[in-house]
Image 1 (tube, helix red, strand yellow):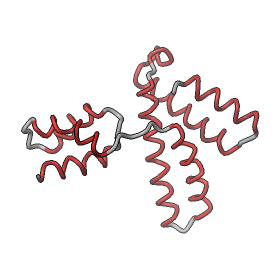
Image 2: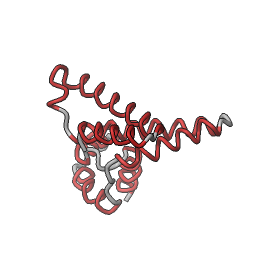
Image 3: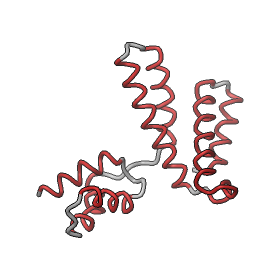
Length: 148
């Protein structure tokens, strides 16, 4: 997925009159551009990778999930429903995550390194996995693997 493909999807949604999708894609494109400017400066458009976009999409998904929870706790079902609709759209652009078995294979060398500091292990694991799985999921699996 590239910024160009996101913009094409935005144009198609505009033509189709899908206002919820248009709004979500506009926010996503803005977040991607902001992140790329922060990361690459003037060369933002040319330096942007698919992995950069995937990271931004995951952040947006996480934010929307937290918003849904907060709105449901506050009894704001109207806002929760809106966030859920946007979350569904964002999940279409979210990269597929690897299975637990594949994740354990990727994490095995990290655990075998003998490091005892969990923070350092998480850092190594996140570098190794690089956007293929959620950080919370990685932490749970790492803890399970360390206890064995």
